[in-house]
Length: 538
Image (spheres, rainbow, N blue to C red):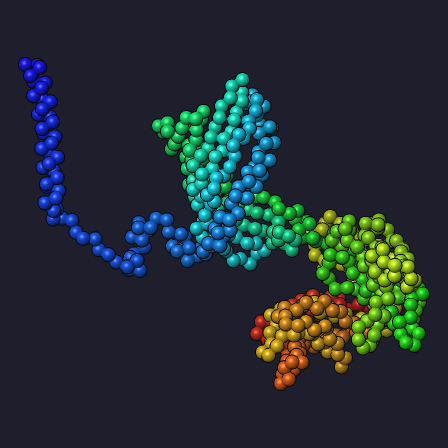
């Protein structure tokens, strides 16, 4: 019975399977379920947010969130540059990791740890969008949404106790939204001193890990365990408000804050060359520190004098005494036309001993080129007395306004009077209806002075200085400053006012110095920066 039962069971199983398949086929073809409805088709604009997110789980943030901007241009840039960035990043990573590994392996009795293979693969990260915050501080805050499903191949060989093991990282996926803060913004390249990075939420990290060729992540429980450890460790270190801080520039060099004052006394000049037709010259001296945008310092003009004596003193801020140079230019003043240069020379500030006055007698040269044969001709000499006074530690954080001492008025200043010095630095957002070729017009006690004209510029920088020698302090006077645009091409509107301001000089007399930006009257947004000094002989 056993043998016959087995035979019958085999045929019964085979026949039953065949009958079941045929019956199922006919039921599927000829009988339709009654509870299945046709899908409802709607345009995407009529779908609600929840439905859209289910339909398109990979919608970029710039679509879902209006605060995020689309930056496809950056993705295209990364795609083109990735082969080169891959090599550069891997090389940098090796250079950073090698000394750290060399320092740590003796603690664990490991012979060596080396990168056998290190490549980030051919798939670059993708930026899904970028959010930028606008603040009143000198900083730039960005939150990019980054997704990287890469194919890196990172293989590390570890040798210990005569044995070698290889660890391989593959198929890396990283989704994160970091907050990147560049601050403070500074006027030195790359225009920010520090980078602060923090994560706004726990990142998603997924990868494959092989040990000696075996997939470690396939071990039951290992995948979730490793995932949670990585997320928690990264979050503990960099989840906002914790940050990763990277210094790019030395703050003192980035801001280039003043570190001292150079006191310059222009004593006299000797044997200057004749520039005028009548056999004389009208010399004056301009002083300027290199790598400084501040206006040049000027002496008074000594008319018809080839051996002038000034004995005028000036204070100039110093930001780097090791590299900066004092540039001395002597000009022949002309009432009409361009002033002729009579000679030039320089003094390196590193030649000065702090707090010790030093006198220099400089030969005036045609140019600063040592190979220029024209420098062999005698153009006279100029005598200067220089003293470098570095700031004390407690003064290093102060601004120049708090530390500088104003120079005294010239010796020929009337008793009880003084010298009113007007620095016209720059203007912003000045715009004319017909043309914008601005210059500043200064009117004081019937005397008019003008800055140079800047063509087609809404934010002109002049850096011009004007002086008014007065018998009495201008306590109750006003200084009229007007920004004017002129154009010879526009015959109907050759001259146009871009705004003006009247400055009360009583504050200047009381405080000795003011440096402010004034809003221009009859201008929508225009402002002008004026610095005023009241110098007395006492």
